[in-house]
Length: 85
Image (tube, rainbow, N blue to C red):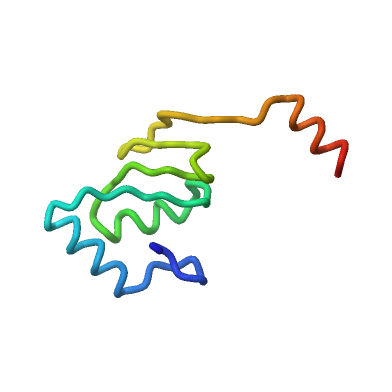
């Protein structure tokens, strides 16, 4: 887990990620979270940009932050959810 329960990068995890990157280990973020403001805070601290899978796989970004894949709900599904709510 990259971020702790307070949505922060702990020093221990930060160091482990930096060491892995320095050793040539390919790194990718995979999270149920959105690619939000935390990315601008966390990625520079670990001295790298990396690709990422966000929102349970609904959006995939490359290392430069460009969207490679995005899956949106069909309008009928959204309408059903709203009606049920």
